[in-house]
Image (cartoon, rainbow, N blue to C red; front, side):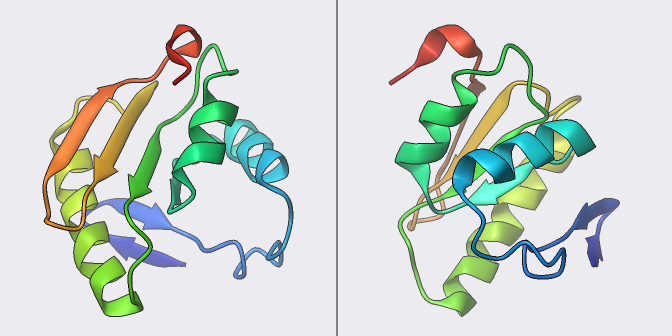
Length: 110
């Protein structure tokens, strides 16, 4: 388990869940009140559009080497910490470091 600035992060491998399907990850996150961080934008936007309420979704785009993922994740954490709540929030961090933050309720399937 990793902890930074009051937020706790766990990788699916640390939970012995590596390789489970995306729906199972989303369902587990909902059950345990986790925020999901992923590179898999298309699938997770579709999955999270089905939730009436979720605990937040962070997408790092595009898939980049690990060191770059760490940099972009750090940006995402900074943005997440400034929010009052991550409930139904979508945070997308782009390769150039720009960030889009918006609500992602059930009615917004892209």
